[in-house]
Image 1 (cartoon, chains in turn purple, orange):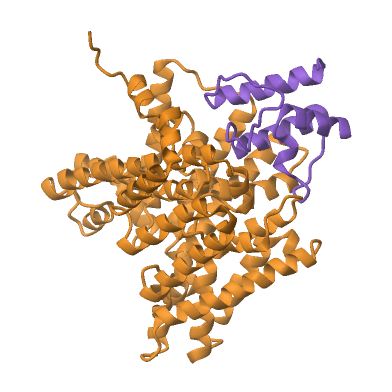
Image 2 (tube, helix red, strand yellow):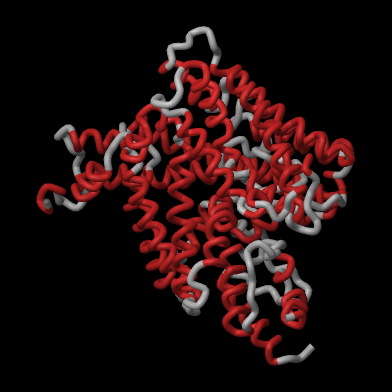
Length: 81
Length: 489
């Protein structure tokens, strides 16, 4: 899927992975957090990024890591909003 | 022509979990038995014989009898805790004994009070799980940590000698002592119950202080995290168990280094401990400045080593039980920022602080101010959560010194938490702003000295003992720079 939002998202995630010393390629269905490639602080950085860049809104009670665990999951979340 | 083994070649050689032959063997009867024996042998130098036998057998059995996994974990976790409490091998009896002595009970055994309180607590936790399932919108289901802390605080108030005496106070105090570590485990179970794929209440109870993490810190977090790091496939379990044995062996290697350091620095060079160096300074017989620095740097290094040994032991045992968990300590010397140091050195401590403090603060405060929001949430985790966890780790001081006394002796650690929180918070905000540490050798060297100077200097205030006040520790630290606190007052 080609989409400006998707490119922006991929770049953010690839930067985050690089900061963790992870230079492996990132497929759209690769697990980011549950696999341990990124940690919980990176997850919060991602939330901040999604809120500021795409105006998504999260709540701690409904928050589930699986909703943001891969590029595909995040795109599904963005389309649902 | 032979070539000397490089670190990469050595790493390849040791990567048994990537060898199909080794994995196939690990799935045979002989392979499984060998992994059990190796894990038991590797646990022995780190745990008592009983603890090694129970933990390794339970972990091994959980993977061999997968249909009974929850029952085995439940029996092993609570059986091990009760067994250790009855023998006085964990700190429950010791902490109960303080109030038994105060109330002058000589016939009651602290060990049996601990066992009784644990059985009661197990029932209460079960009721708590059922309550959270029945009332998912209730306060307890929505704010489990706040409710657990409120319960702990209420029980502590009731234990005040001004309010209760005698048997009532002893019984209440016993409940406080056994409840305290579960304050950091139980909220994870309640949070998991909110999800669609929540584990069963029996599984939630089974991993409350699981046998591989019989302390105040949930290594492996809760059922949700464990579920996501578990695969029932035989090959995956073989990989995980091989990695578990390797981690236990690595813990033994670090233990050998630790013992060698003790022999050299403590026995041969008679280098004092940090608290002894502070005592000597306060008594007017300070160590030479160079010796003082050596004590501080050596003490910090020993602490980092001990943290790694414990983390590898606990995660190694969890991996033997089939959970492919990330390591608890991972190359901390390579940290390029304070945030990274905290993440690499204290991974599971950081995780629990993130889950219980950072996330709630992050989603509720300063949502319109991204940098302030990130700083505040980090501050709540590395500062408030960190301080609260350590205060509760020594909860017996509330009985011994009173709440005011316990808080007063905690001032040094409070200062440490404050400085650490500011440091980690700023580090996190910089990362949020897109700062990326340079990767040149000079930049890495600078980052190493910056991070570890910070850690070493703060070690004066964070060594965990409560024998010296903040000002006494500050005076000691200034003396290492040839200064005295009196010069500034």
